[in-house]
Image (cartoon, rainbow over the protein chains, first blue to last red):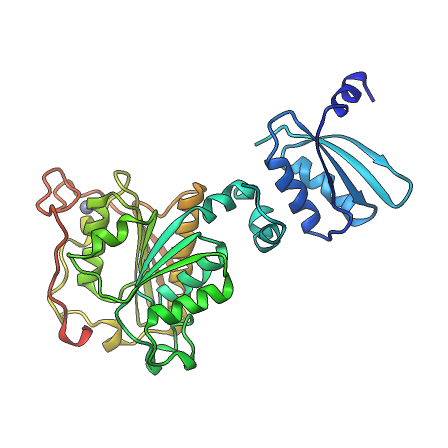
Length: 87
Length: 266
Ligand SMILES: [Zn+2]
């Protein structure tokens, strides 16, 4: 991970936890939260292993957002850092 | 204002769509549509627009629910017979989506009330079953610069077109004047297959949603016809009529007109 990405991740605008949600509400919640951000702002998302970690980052990419990093929390959850690149 | 978690869930299948998203859904929630006619066409339009979360829906119809309506007017139920169609329609729409607002107009549209009625809405649906009303709605929408969806259904056929002010030919550009009363059967005399209202009305609801969210290409400048027996859709290009009496270069119609209605259609 480059220094630039680390610096960016330090400026997280908003955090959400979607571990209580199931498909498609996992993606809907992430997408809705990103839509409220300004371009360039970063969202931190805590999500479950399995279907959410397979689908949410991919769907956000398809929506034109930048997935910066996916961190395994080693407790069955992941933390995803996404930058808003697309309105 | 951000959508609530319940709204995110209710509208999730819209929000997932890249073309709609939260922005498009918020636009729908802040939009208003007037549906003129709570019959075969107005029924599916009302149900889909209520479900879609159109913030304010107006519905106009002077009739009461009759047993013979129920073969196609799916917004009304057997228990609604005898109720004003607008009340029955309002109950059905609010049962689907209690977070919208529904205004009812238990009245025929006429030259004297239509401009006041359409003024308050972003998009108008013509779900009427007679020519005088169709010309009246067209003229009023052209004069008030309101977009609307025209549609008509009879027997196994249906048609629709979308009007956008200043951008497309109007209904009168194509059809000029109403036929003489009783020269053409209304759907009361001719019959209509029940699902026709569903096909054409759903397309009207689709046009409204596309207009309100600003996505895709509208059915402006075209007439779409559907023949159920031949299972054939045709999209016919419509020209502007520069001599159109309402939207042409020298319009003769400067305010809405009430045409005489066939006796049996009243
Ligand atoms: Zn015209």
